[in-house]
Every structure is written in structure tokens, then in C-alpha cells.
Image (tube, rainbow, N blue to C red; front, side, top):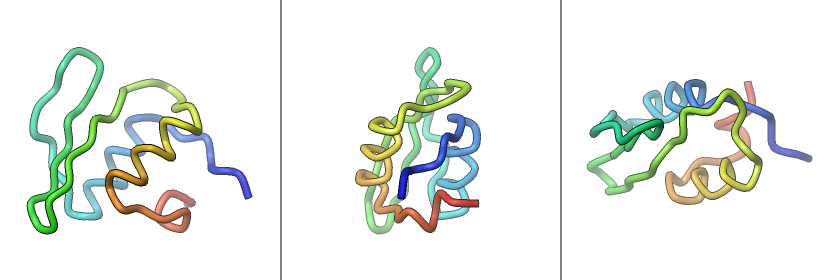
Length: 70
């Protein structure tokens, strides 16, 4: 099953529901952090994320396919 095509803004919303918060912004990227257990990732604010980029962010954040399917 392929990963869905989602935007950076949608991924920020998903990460926020999973305990992440916006640490800061650098250009077109949002740096998100979770304190416990610690995790930090960078989310590009693109209209559509590449599937490889989405997969890498999911790994860093500990997300599953079910977390990003809506």
C-alpha cells in the first residue's frame, strides 16, 4: 500500500496531535519537537510532500501508516 500524498501543513497537524509542537521555523521548513520521548523533525511546507520525505519524517517521529491515513 502506497503512502498518501499529503501537504506539509497536513503533516504538521498530524504531528501536533501526536504530542509535537512547533519549535521554530527556518525558511519554508517547520522544526517540530516532542519532549517525551524526545524526537525532533523538520517538515517542509510544500503543497505535496514526496513519499520518501514523508517516510523519513514518519521514521523520525515514530508514526505509522495508520497515523497519516485519513
